[in-house]
Length: 150
Image (cartoon, rainbow, N blue to C red; front, side, top):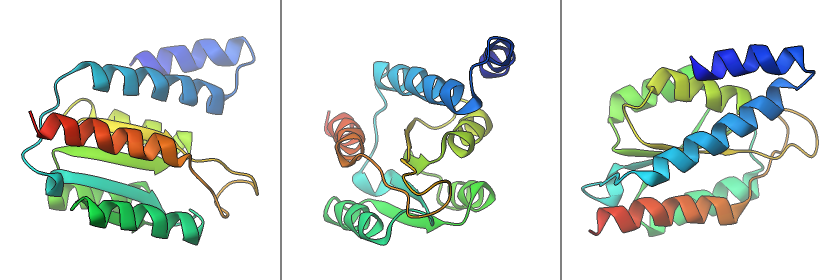
């Protein structure tokens, strides 16, 4: 509800949906990290990657998840991500996508599973060879792994 109200206010003041979404994701990630989101094991961490992510970045994240014994999937969109979450029932999610897809997913999950949502970077425009800040990905993984070891 907070996002929808702030989005309406943002439009009135000429703020783009991407900017509002990015701000919402920062707040959501901060709140997620304020709680003790314990996980049973790294296998309960689920990486969700968009298929538009540059192949070398996909491989780097897939390898990072493999080394840390997490699950990782490259998916075609929000519906595929929702289905994968229902199928696997993770205890924590690291999601990478555009702001629109991430906000939509966070609204659907609505606090049921802790999510660190990382917006992708789109140097060639939307849905084409997107990138992500690997420091943000590693920080999210380290957050969930450290909570799982308490």
